[in-house]
Image (cartoon, rainbow over all chains, first blue to last red):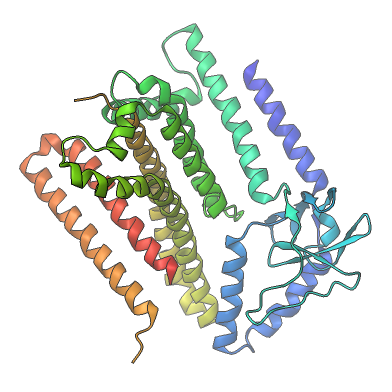
Length: 358
Length: 63
């Protein structure tokens, strides 16, 4: 019964996606004319072109591009003297202006700017646009993938949990997930938080581990979905850890920050600001670590693939493709490792928050 | 003469590399001496390496 439900859900999703998908013929022709010119470009121009592709790959987008020319629009929600809601197909992949209630908007490097009817974007000395940027609350590619992932995880884990009602043996996806859940409980939660308090935090630790891991793995698919190489996403995750740590902390935690026991009185005054600073550095380090690791992985992979096009020869294609394959396998390891490290350090901070007096 | 920022970033990354290398080497020694504690040593190694790595990445992205 449950299996049927999930199957229907996935089928419905595929149908919706295929209906809203449209091929951009004009875009394809545009690409062909670029292809012809590729061999005539100088090495420096080719490098600049690849840099552009990599930068675009790392940015969030208002369209969901599955492959070249196949994409579907997502809703754009702007707060600009009232809500402005329209589909991103109005932008035609950033080529045209979008008009909503008499306001005109233009996409510039995946960011939306307010313009006049002609779509002029004025630049300052550093090539940054000086146009007004409306508050962008859009369902962008990343937001869309996060919502899908939340739904996916909800259904998977709901199904797994239900299977345990009929007996202790895991069924289906549970056979794969049970060892991981037990690993997080026995190797991460209990040693770091302690037997007494770990149950309170298990739900968050499991969520954060699987969420990061699945999203990292999704980043390795050819769709170019890099949710965890978005700074905002990792910051939000680290902020969750930060707030849970602060709001569940006992008085020992606070006394260790402001009035460190066991050290001379004078040292306590010196230590207090350092410890207080540490409270904010910890989640910041969590953010940077995940974001930088995933971004660096993608940049390295795409740069090595890009070397084929810089060299512009068949001989280069072989070794660089093999190198990319090997690095991709390494990236799969990093995907799991970063999820593990994030969960591990989160558990460590929770542990310090609930530590008993000794 | 002014030294470019990127030289400093490079130095930090070299330092981080040496640090992680030392952690890895010491962990290998420790595991060889006490193979039964391999799991615990590995965990401690990963945490220490991750903390240093954070500094390396911060330097990389500041530049």
